[in-house]
Image (tube, rainbow, N blue to C red; front, side):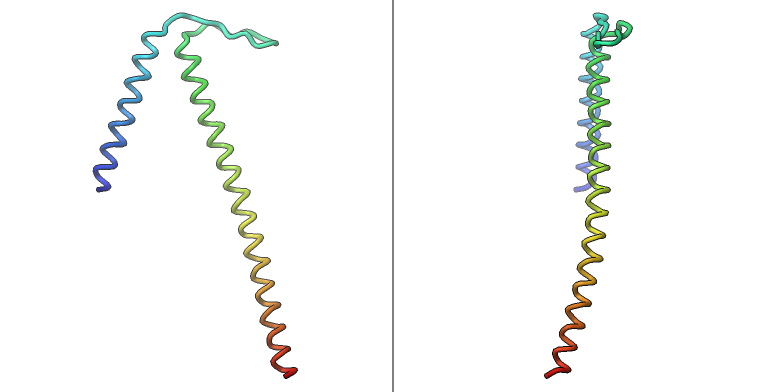
Length: 100
């Protein structure tokens, strides 16, 4: 089953690469992007679109990594607090048992 998933994933990647290649070959018109402060050199429309997807994916990965890091730190902090609370509860139970 895992072998079939790998084959399907490879086929999907190959199809996406082929689609990107066909897209880039069909969109050769050079366009310069004009930001408020500067203007870029002219490149093909496909280059700009593919670059925007790549940059978006990288930004998404970075945000995911940062969120995961924050979550793991929060998890560790909560685990420590839970451990201290459980120790305090056990200590309190022991004192109650001695009092009775």
